[in-house]
Length: 361
Figure 1 (cartoon, rainbow, N blue to C red):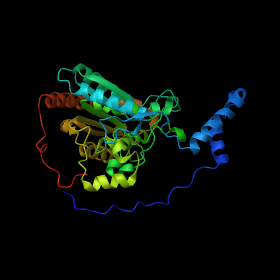
Figure 2 (cartoon, rainbow, N blue to C red; figure 1 turned 180 degrees about the vertical axis):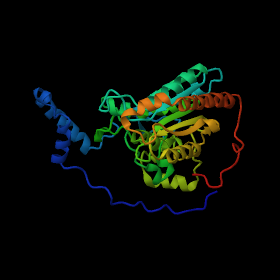
Figure 3 (cartoon, rainbow, N blue to C red; figure 1 turned 180 degrees about the horizontal axis):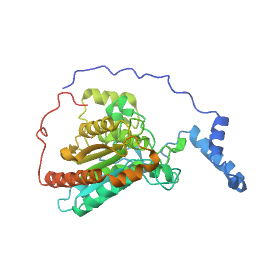
Figure 4 (tube, one colour; figure 1 turned 90 degrees about the vertical axis):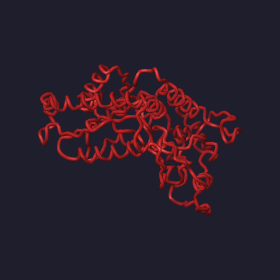
């Protein structure tokens, strides 16, 4: 049992107060800058008044229903949008656990570049993802291609940043994330509500990513941060009465088991660059996935390579055309993951699967 600990003081004083009416109105009207909206100015004025009222009243989750008997507080008002995502996760988990279902791989194309927006050309990451997809399909795996570049080219598609509730106390971080949507702040259309079930439904994960300034692309990092709730997150928001930091600290200090909601899935990685940083990104992604207790498929399943090393950006696709070795190595990543999935579903367990963690977190 953890040692008794008084509830720590909640530290306050960082964030500024609410926006003034003038600031709010300016930000609201910026959405309608296009002169084509001028014919609807009267309607926009009406919407402004509603939005301002909702902001003042902090109408984060305007449509709720009672939690019910599955939760610590059956009378707590839970967001129907959160409940929808939770139900999708549960359905995905049931499907994932069916022994006779086909193996499913979530294949993540992590580049932010595509040919439907400013770059005007598809990414090499997408081409490598297609190689992996064809190889997985040949191995009789269902492939769910998650193209994160859509964040840059789709209307109103967004992944909001993690608010780091976990750093207040782990039980304050809910599974799935309950920070979004926040209608009073206009934080809606959060893509993670769809992405969480896609991770859960998969038996294996392959991430194909470029290196941007020695790091993973911002589109990938947004998703990574928002997956913190899959690694120890609290499936019952009523236990913390929504976002009550004091309650969350008390629960964690009484003893928290840090449930790993994605444990046991196989993973593979393809990290590519043109000058520096591939090994750094490969290590950080491997560590992240391993910390969540996903299982590296095999030694060939984790790859970092340079394409057109210190050559012009303009000819990088031609460099990929010529590099038959990396194309085959990407196929091997996919083959390794497909094989590992079969082994795991047949009963393979890691040697440390039943060990207790002396310092869970």
